[in-house]
Length: 309
Image 1 (spheres, rainbow, N blue to C red):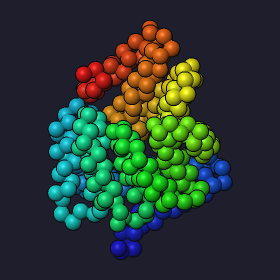
Image 2 (cartoon, rainbow, N blue to C red):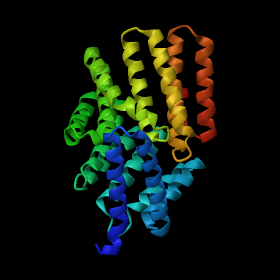
Image 3 (cartoon, rainbow, N blue to C red):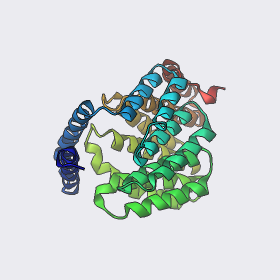
């Protein structure tokens, strides 16, 4: 790589180190300001360095916004036909396909492509990219009740992360999924302990209001807490947790840089959890209202509602 070619990467690396230092020093105002700089630098770099894979990803996003799932699938698949495809690009395209297939309830295709994304990410540096793909695979496995396999995937992800404070958010999101596995297995005390650890890592970062990933992880944390409370017959506590999950999911979907079909569907998913929880407490009117909100979201997006079929 020439000196000129390395300049953008050096700039990104400097910003990432700046972000890590701010987080480590608990200077979250500085961290949030750095996030803005990273977004601006990324946008400028993409404008100045168009690439076929990025253009196809943008095209897929436009297809998704118009509920053209066939067009989105085709665009993502075309990325794998590009010459000299880098492993991280191939992995990202596989993970995007996995997300698309989950969206339209093609479960076996989603899991297969999540695993392809993980396999493609293994030679990629840094290894934290592999952690991202492992987390996606674990979510698919949990969604399809392959709990033991999900735990093995999460154990690998957590072993890669280690104890570096800079990756507290990544560690917390994987711990939340691990706790959800323990809820499925009836290991409630273990799930509670792991959730407490994850919340300890996430909560301080939540002061960064623009940090969509952090608030998304917190929303999923509350959904896992709701499932644990329901498993312990704490019905009122489960409702409260689902309400917080919905609130945070709505916040993420309202952020201009995070608004997408996927963040809106996450709101719908959290509303389904809330509705089911309300129904167990005999709050039938409130449950019906939550389901109506969910249906409105899905219909506006053109998403098939598997629960209504």
